[in-house]
Image (cartoon, rainbow, N blue to C red):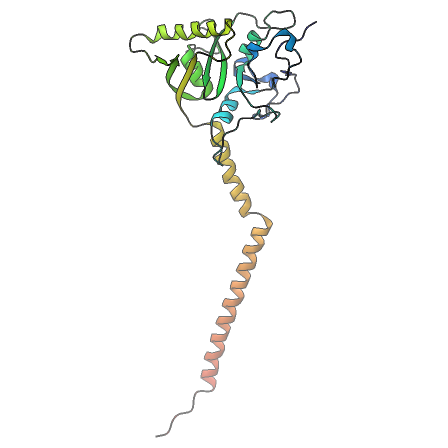
Length: 268
C-alpha cells in the first residue's frame, strides 16, 4: 500500500488547533487549513517520504496569523504548529483531500470539488467552492470572490491574470467568476508551480489584532497588580505619610513654643 503524496497531514482526534485550542476533528473541512512548505501538486508518488509539513489548524485564524502584523509590527511566516517550516501553500480541508487522494487513488470527499487556485501576498491558496449555491455551508456566498474575501478577511479590489485586471469587470462580473474557476482548473490540471491568478485587496480588522490588543491591555493591568508594583506603591505611600506627619508635627511644635515662650519685648 502506498502513502498519500502529502503525507504529513496527520489530523487525528487528539490534534489541537493552536489558535482555537479545539480538536482538529471538530473543525469543518471548509474552515480547516492544511499547511505546506511546498506545492502539493508537484509531489510525485515516489515523494511519499518528503517532508512537506502538512499540519492543520483554523483557516481564518491562520490567514490572520500570516498576513497581519502583530503588536511588535512583524508578520509571521512559519507554521504555527511546528515552527519548523515556512508556510508556502495553504489548502482548505476539502481542497487538500481533492488534490491529495487517498491510498486507493480516490478522493476521500463525497463529491468532486471545484477549486480556485491563486496567490495572495507570498502565499499560494487552494480553496474549495460548493457545487451549487444551495449549499448550506456557503448559502449566499457561493461565488469565488465571496469565498476569497471571507477566508482572507479582505475586501477584494482586483484579480489579475497574466498582468491584466480581470476583476472587477465593468460589463459582466458573472463571466469573470466563471473565468476564475476555469483558469484555476487549467493551472491545477497542468500542475503549474505558480498560479496564474493574483488577488489584491484591502485587509479588514482581524482576530490577531483583536487578540493581541486585548492581551496587551490585560498584561498592563496585571503588571500594575504585580506584588513588586503593589509593594512600591505601598512603600511610597507610607514614606509620604511619614514625611507629611513629620512636617505637620514640626509646625505644631513651633506654634506651641511660640505661645509658651513668646519673644521678649524690646524696650525703647
